[in-house]
Amino acid sequence: MAGERTWAWVLICIWAAGMAAVAEGRTTAGYYDLAVFSFQAGDYAGAEQLLKKALLVTPDDAYVHYYLGKTCLKQKRLDEAEGFFRTARRLSPGIPGLAYDMGVLYQKKADYSRAAAEFEAVPAEEPSHVPALYGAGISYFMLEQYQKALDSLVRSAALSPSIKPDALFYAGICHYRLSEMDQALAMFDEAAATARTESMRTEARRWAADIRARQEREKPLRLYARAGYLYDDNVQLAPLDSDTFTGKGDQAAVLYFSGQYAHPVSGKLDIGAGYSHYQTFYQDFDNYDLTGSIGEIFTRYHLSRVTLGLSYVPAYYWVDADSYLMQHQIRPEIRWRVTDADEAVLSYGYSRNHYFTDQRRDGHANEINLNLFHGVKLLDGFLYCGSGYEDNTASYPDEYFTEMTGRAGVSAGVFEKIRVNVGGEINGKNYDHRDSVYRVTREDSRYAVSALVSWNPLADWLGVAAEYTYSRNDSNISDYDYERNTTAMYITADF
Image 1 (cartoon, rainbow, N blue to C red):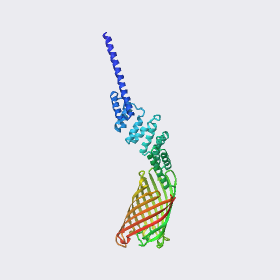
Image 2 (image 1 turned 180 degrees about the horizontal axis):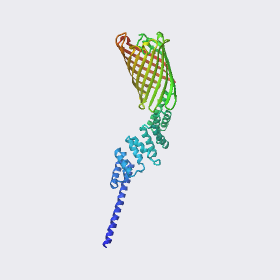
Image 3 (image 1 turned 180 degrees about the vertical axis):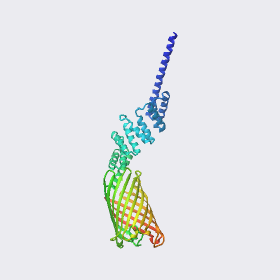
């Protein structure tokens, strides 16, 4: 009988342990099921309490850790979410949806490299595959890996009509960054046509308009001409860089023409040539008519945000019918699109000058200029500022000088077909040696402001313009002090 009682106790203990295990399992499952329902209903705090109760019973349940991570992610407790996700992956690496949620987590933490890796790891057969493709595209976009971003964004757009507008919008920006303007324009046009919100439509149309304007500026062949009438209240005795004036006014006919052709050698490289011609015809001071003939041979290499340029610019000037100056200039340039609204242009110029009427001025000049541009949507235009430095040497010591320049201005669309440009410039010019005639070392300060109003009432290529310029030079040698006002009216043509 004693043996039978012993066996009965053993069986009872085994049965009790089994029942406890079953009860424990049912309790864990109950907590977990209720937590999932609460999570799906948006009650994240309630879900978290239930999941933590389940965790007390079964601390190694991978799915409990996974849902705790999802709950913390919804509550923006990103570090805690990451800890739970990592534990869930350690306990069960193949949980469906885990890679996608970890991608979302790392994207919210701005850890875009890890986010892209997680999104790429989502199997194609999972329901989250298309959002993962889009997420990978956005992550690569934030990493400025635009070619990789394009692949994911375009694939996600093809698979999901709901994701398509946003994916095409970012794909358009990727093409833009890669200087693939035709492809970018197609993406923005389609994004604008399929967008679900007015803000998205507006933004896509703005990008498309910007590209069309840029393509118009950078079209292979450009022609510009203007002809008009100018009144000058202080005619310059010698052109360009002279500071000697008549002190008298005169009126003049003005003609200007320029043309440029750029030939694409490859997707990134252009070569081209240009020519500009300027001419004035004074009524009384016709001995001071100026003619300028300026050529250009250039090459440009386009990167995603940077354009490298190199130009050779020969120029020849006449006063009346007599040769005045022959100049050869080499000009390398870097244009950097810092943001979508900001651009910086850095250029260097080396000039070799030969003056036919005053060989004492023969020599060379080195100059460097930095200009910054900031687009302003509210103005339908841009602000700009810049500075420059020039070091001029010559065959005669009186003509050695250095010059610092500062400039600023704004270009704005006032009405639909009217544009206003207002700018100012200040120059400080210091000569290196004492003037041989005046026996002092010359120092000048020059100020200038200008305003140009252009109007295209009939066609975009044909317009009229009015321009006013005021300039003043203050020098420690009084003979070089002057004030000058010019007013001009033009007819313009831009093709």
